[in-house]
Length: 102
Image (cartoon, rainbow, N blue to C red; front, side, top):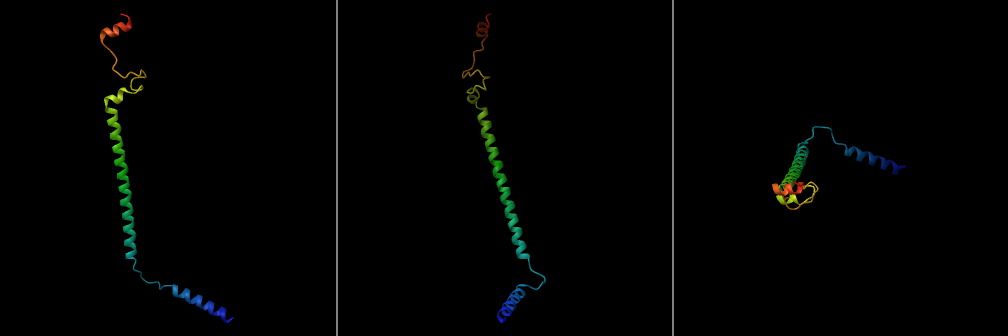
């Protein structure tokens, strides 16, 4: 019985010791750390977004450059209307008249 009372009193003493008096607390250091963490996180998000946008711009420039090169436009069958011509077609007036039977 004496052992149980000692255990109970030690638990109550620990619980009472863990309770801190409810007075004004100085949380300014904690708040400053939280504020800095949020600012760092926001800066990281903005940097990631700029990096993604820069990647999109570079990709768009490369696609535009490929699209504007004259050889790239002639090498595909889609660009030639399915005819698959690699060289320029002969469109002189005599050539067309011969093909049309005139």
